[in-house]
Length: 302
Ligand SMILES: *[C@@H]1O[C@H](CO)[C@@H](O)[C@H](O)[C@H]1NC(C)=O
Ligand SMILES: *[C@@H]1O[C@H](CO)[C@@H](O)[C@H](O)[C@H]1NC(C)=O
Ligand SMILES: *[C@@H]1O[C@H](CO)[C@@H](O)[C@H](O)[C@H]1NC(C)=O
Image (cartoon, rainbow, N blue to C red):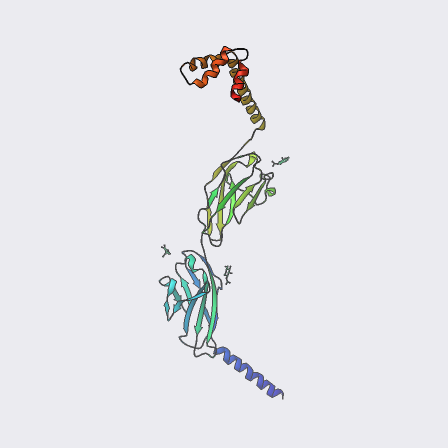
């Protein structure tokens, strides 16, 4: 009884062993490789076991749910033509990667002489792109206590850039409370959108500001720009307004005095001699000095 069992077990093992010998099995050194744009990159497809000599090898690219051939009938085709080669046994090497090469790639090996005669492996390739110089906007002057928004954006980088802001070459911390220099500053900094927003600027917030866009492939910065914070001096403004009002009053009083003394009237009189008859009113007024004022007004009502 025990002997038959042993025999069975042996037979089973042999069959399994036999099957595993006659199977094509792939593996990869790196299922999700990445490279910077314009570098070369290897999509590793290794054959762990095979019995067939000269198996059929194909590579396909899968992007946006579309599948296209990259390596077919021993030739590189499609986008990668003249930019890629196969390294034995089945590894695909892209020589000058572009951002458009970011995709899934499937290595397929068909081995007709093996009992398990097909295997495939999927590689997720990411091509990283350095950020370009970000566009920065910094208000040139802001009154004390007002809000201010500084923006920074860059759209080339892949993966998406994150942002840092600097004031006078010193990095602005995410949390103002984490640094004594920025402790009382009222800003909020968003590293994902690049927005630096002050709810109420202080004198101490003035300075040269610039921003840095950063991802795994590199960094890029915009030129420093000055943000000035000026005092809205309330006392000064009130005094200024008062001075203007006093000056205006003086002018008005002066004009009234001159009017009372007949300075304008005499001028008008001389004018009325050779000008429009409408000015006769003024002539009336000077002749009848006592009731002139009244007459003058009533003529307007009529
Ligand atoms: C890589 O490709 C880019 C354009 O796709 C080209 O400008 C550059 O010269 C190429 N570099 C090499 C080393 O072939
Ligand atoms: C490929 O890798 C990137 C990160 O490197 C990931 O964001 C993406 O989801 C992966 N795609 C698939 C289909 O696994
Ligand atoms: C922050 O403000 C408080 C109170 O207004 C003041 O006592 C402190 O010295 C200020 N700290 C800095 C670093 O300016």
